[in-house]
Each structure stands twice: as C-alpha cells, then as structure tokens.
Amino acid sequence: MSPLNITELFEARATRPEAIAEAAARRTRRPLLGESGRTMIVAADHPARGALAAGGKPLAMANRADLLDRLCTALQRPGVDGVLGTADVLEDLLLLGALENKVVIGSMNRGGLAGSSFELDDRFTGHRAEDLTRMRFDAGKLLMRLDLDDPGSLNTMQGAANAINELAERGLIAMVEPFLSRRVEGKVRNDLSAEAVARSIAIASGLGGTSAYTWLKVPVVDDLDEIGRALETTTLPTVLLGGEVPDDPAATQQRWHKALQLPNVRGLVVGRSLLYPHDDDVASAVDAAVALL
Image (cartoon, rainbow, N blue to C red; front, side, top):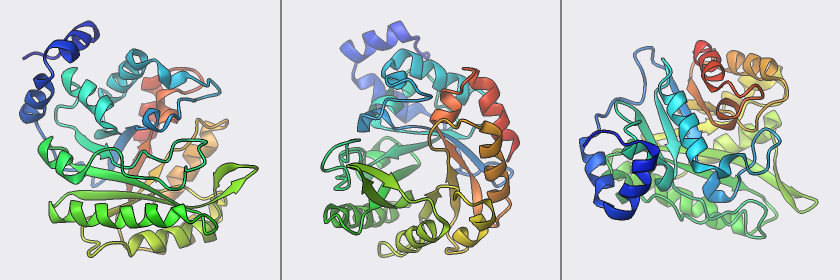
C-alpha cells in the first residue's frame, strides 16, 4: 500500500485498522545511531499527557493534522534520525509513510497528567515492551519525576525499573528521562540545578536488573559551567532533551553545543522548540539543531 495523505488517513482509521500492523511489518528499520555516532530524534509525546501548549499557545498541539504536517517536515530534513511518540501519533506517521528508515521510540508512561493531583504517580498507560516488539519499534521512553515529598513517586520509580527489565529482555533500548521535582504553588516543577540533575542521573542509572540497554535523556542544566559536572555522573549513553520553546534559541543552542562535546552525549531529542519555533519555520529550526551534531 502506498503512503496515505491526511484525508485517506481518516478513512483508513475508520475502515482498515489492520493497515497499521501491515505498515509496521513493512517498515524499513535502521540503527539508533547514525554514521556519525550521533542521533537526532524529534519528540511528539506531549499530547497524551494533556500537555498541548507550545510557544505561548495553549492548544498549539491540539490540531493533529497540523502536528503531523510539522512532524513530516521535520522527519524529511537531512540528519533527522527518528521520532519519539505515543501509539496514536506513531501509527498516524506509519500510515503516512513517514517512518521509513527512521528510529521509532514509543512513549510508555503517560498516566501522570499535566496539572493533576496524581501527576507524580506516573503510571505506565502507553506502550508496553511487548507492543514495541510487535510493532518492530526500536526503543521505549519513560519519564521518571521524583518528588521526595510525594509517595506517588515510588510507584513511578518501580514502574520505570520494571519497564527497563522488560525492554532489556527483548534487546530494546530504554530511554529514561529522570528529574528531581517538587511542587511550587501546587504545580510540579523540575529542578535543573547541576546537583539535582546529577542525583537524578545517578538514581536512573541504577534502575533495573541490567543497565546494558539503558540510555538517559537529560536536561541541560541552567549553569553552563556545570554541564560537564552533572553528566559525569554516569557512563551510560545520554541524549539531551529540548524542553519548552525557548525565548532565546541562540542561548539554548549554545548550551546544547557545549554539552554535545562530552564523551557520553550522543545526540538530541527535541520536540516543541523545533516543531513550534517562534518564526514557525520548522525546517530551519530542525536544520540548526542538526548542525550542532
């Protein structure tokens, strides 16, 4: 079957659900790292947590056709290796033919809805390891926010360890995104100090019965001089996350550039700041990030 356009995608979803498994079975796969030993992944797993805002627009990611168009533009740019998303987004991209020869990372825990009272009890409500194997995807991503004052964080931590074990049993990469977090005026805030990032990396590195298939997805700390110290905490392969759309893209790229010089940093996993840049030029934003690699 040829790749679909967006109108045909709606029809296939309604009349041929088996087309998703057929597209997954045909998809050409590739290694996680490119020839340069680096990787550039576009992230699009925000909507399933109810986090739809980007660049000051509260519902920027609520238009699925627009999001898919931006993702397809990003995935077509030279140097982009793959995509991270939940099942619905990845299956849309499969039907659109956008995942050929791309790395595909499934997002596993989406239960900690943005702004909820149970946000830090982040249950695994997305991809399971068995789903990733069945769909011939390449890795699973799990978010692990730990608030030492919130008992729900222990459930998240245990779920993360179980997922790491289940992925490793199947030879699949577990991409763990750890944070030390706390509530500020009722909202969950991640601590991006060098000390907090180092502690979160140390905790995540020790999860599970093996770390052979564990990668870390970590933020670039606020203090540019402390980036190296935070990332010295582990020998595990590490990618840098993008976070919110920055007010100063040049400063963000400077931080990425410095962190990318460290020996265990293998690339970038960036979402909103590339898909919804202030000038709305997705291709240019992606090309600028790829150039850093």
